[in-house]
Image (cartoon, rainbow, N blue to C red):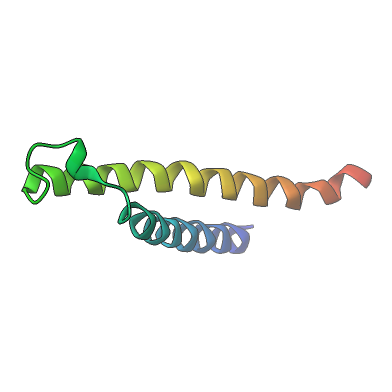
Length: 78
């Protein structure tokens, strides 16, 4: 029972870190300087980090929900 929980935790951590990296990489092309007063300042960097985490959380949650739901389909025919 706990063995499966450990595997799910590892998958969850890896997927979250992966999508944080992908989101950070993708947001590098976004022009934040049009929306903030000081694009090189610490507030703009914190905003970039918060936006990255928020978007990555949404994307990784969608991916994990899809993954877990597709794994549950095998119980439909049992």
